[in-house]
Length: 298
Image 1 (cartoon, rainbow, N blue to C red):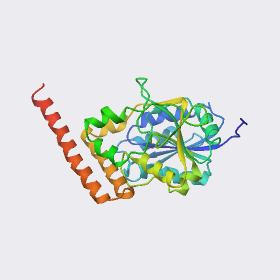
Image 2: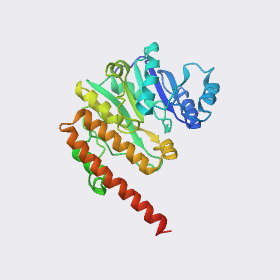
Image 3: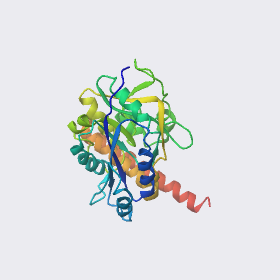
Image 4: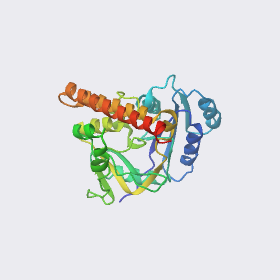
C-alpha cells in the first residue's frame, strides 16, 4: 500500500460545561502522534459556567486550536454544524467529530486516513468503541428499522436484539467491518462529502443523529465502516448523565426516533402514534419503578 501524504483533518469538539474534559482531549490530540495536520475547532454550546472563558484563555495562543461560542444550547447536531462550517475556510481534507469524553492514541488517525483512501464509496469510518470497563460496544451496526424502534421501549429489545451482534470483519479489506451506523461520539469523514450532504440533520436535540447521517450517506450510495484493529475509549454519556435524568434521556431518544420516522418511514403518522404509545408505556414504567424503589425498597 502506497504511503499517504499529509492531510488536513478538521476536528470539532462540542463542549457543554465540562471544560476540563475538553482541555484533556485537546492536549491528547496535540501529542503529535500523527503525521497529519489537525485544525481543532472547540465549540462551547452556551455553557452556563466559565467554560468559554477558561478554554479561550487556555488555547488562545495555541496554533491551529480555536475556541468559539454558540449563543444558545442548540443541541448536538446544530452545535457541531456550527463548528463544521467554521472549518470551511481551512479547506480540510477530513472532518473528525469527537465527544469531549473520548480518549485514543492519535496515531490511529493515520490508520483512518489510509483505510478511508483504500475503500471505494466510503461514507464515514470509526475505530471500535470501548468503555472504561474494557467492554467493546457491539450495538447499532444496522440502521434500526421500525420493528427495532418499536421494541426498543421494552425489555425484550435489550435481551434479544441490542446485544446480539458480533464484531467481525466482513469486507475484502482485512480488519474492517461494513456497518449501517457508527457512533456519533467519533465520526471520521471526507469533509467535502460531509459538506455536500449538509453535515448533520438538525431534526434532533440529542441522540439518533448517527442514523440520520447513515441514511443520508446510504441514499447517495456510501457505506460506513468500523476498523477492528484500533479503538477509542468512551466515558459514555458523562456530560448528559450529569445534566439529565434517566427519564429525560429516554425522552430525548424517543424524540429522535419520532423525528426519524417522520422524515424517512412510510405511513409515518401511524408509526409515530405507535411510538408515542410505547413511550407512554415506557415512561410510566420507569416512573413506577422509581416510585417503588424510593418508597418500598429503602
